[in-house]
Length: 301
Image (cartoon, rainbow, N blue to C red):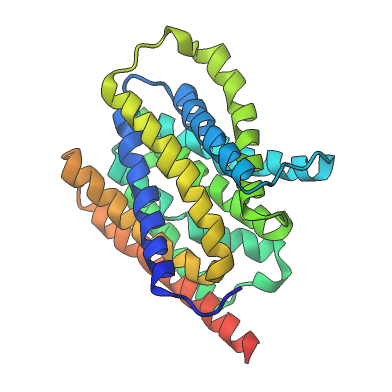
């Protein structure tokens, strides 16, 4: 890893945070005429074409052994197919800003999984406090009485949380098992994600019968080209340049800007729980990431 983080790296870090935070807005714009499985399959298919072209340009190829394709299959399921579908389905029933705040719990869930499955990422008291604060935000956001009235909106919120946990599983798995170059990992895992979700789209939604409006088509193209293909390439570039700890700071951007996009552009009106939960989620992320950074600094010295 190059320890000299340049202004260009920080600009790319900001860019990927803005890209990912805006994806909830475009999902909301598309989901009214493009159902969840089809939306997921379409954006992944677009990304696969772009990533495969980039891989060809780099004169690299995908491996053919079972071990690496097993890794691709796991990353494709938990990193693309499952969370993309859950988020798309959830946004049928809840606002994009609320979705962004719920997704902000992903790094906290990652810290918990890393503690369990990665030997050198055990968390301490500080990390535990951050996790408790982050999940406290979830309790406020969903509401303490949610389990007594499991309406569609509440179920949609739980679907988004499962999507966040799915991302956490993918991140933890990638840290432990991903060894191939970034363009290869991104193309292979994205292709595997398409293999997971495409049959479901065909069987359950018959995409050829749909009549998406113009805004939905534009949104799907942006999701595929920018939020999936381009953001994945930036991610794999930055993760080698700045390291996982610095890259994790992008999680401050996603829930804040994701909520802002919905309020400013979709005129979503949050109640008091949303800003309160946002503060708690961001505080949890800050404590977890700060503890990890201090731990890494102590190991280096």
